[in-house]
Length: 105
Image 1: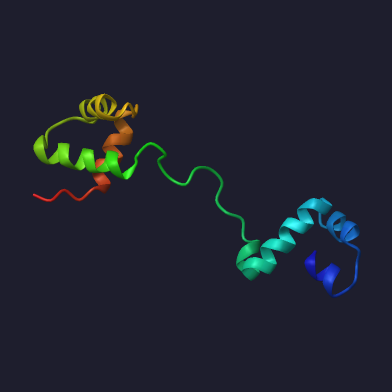
Image 2 (image 1 turned 90 degrees about the vertical axis):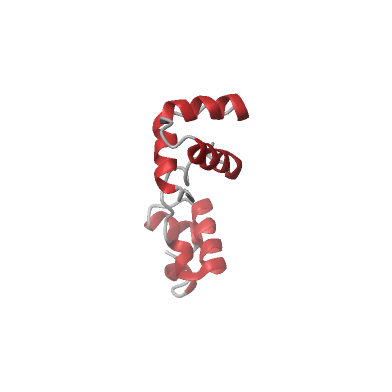
């Protein structure tokens, strides 16, 4: 689409329509290409980029609690996080986070 416009001189409206894009989308693609080259044309993965509620403070709290109480369940730790930070976590979120944390013993 960009090549059609730049090299072949096809008007933006026609180049975009020929490739299934709107004129506005053409300009977004063009800006991404100018900013980042070919990498700018690669789609990002959809969805969130990781857990939203697991801030560094919450992870530090979980690490400390796990050191103090190694047998605490995910549900227990989730309740403690809610009491301490007002952040509601599912027990599985806590369990996954704990698997990813290296606990210094």
